[in-house]
Length: 243
Image (tube, rainbow, N blue to C red; front, side):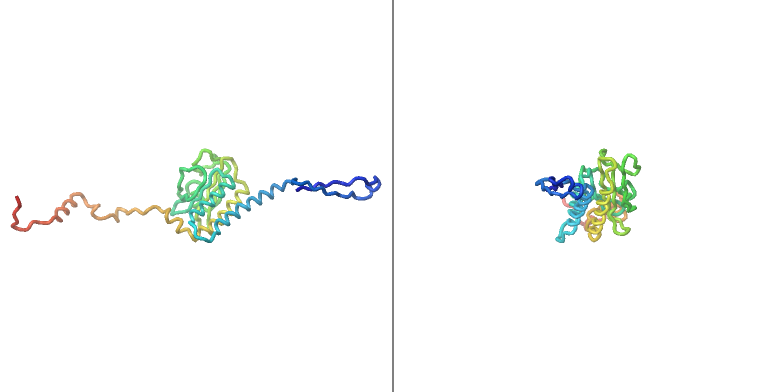
């Protein structure tokens, strides 16, 4: 409901020049004045972070990987990102555990390689306004014009990386940076006590080395044949063959 201020008329001209004009309030049903756009943006940003806090604070048992997937889905939906992915550090690699957008060909990055791997190694946020001018950028989508990578860390220990890409140049300004940095802190607190459980399934299955392989598989063929002959039951002395 809006409010319109209107002077009351009917006073003699002398009184109008001597006294302040009275003000009449006229209420117009259904009419509203626009709010401050800056305040609206701040409110929207806080609302996204608040929803993420609620997702991560649910006390009942839930699959941690599913919770992370829901957080990434919420960011993708509310911020309308072209692509967003979450990587966890497993050994010397950053391995993707959740994403929204097109299916990328890049499932993992070695630490120090590409912007994701570099953020996983250094723990430093990187904003790329134009990916065509960034030598470290590893292209997964031809549509990508700008990128931001945000490490997820506790103190100096990097647990993972959020990678967000846009099909618009210079898309990640202060508001998105603030939302993603705050989200990274929340995720770090959530992931830290669950890190072993989350990364256990991501570790590659250990393959036995040549030194650990069974001895018979390393024997030369001639030795294996000799061993097989020696293991056959021998005929008793003086035994006659059956016809």
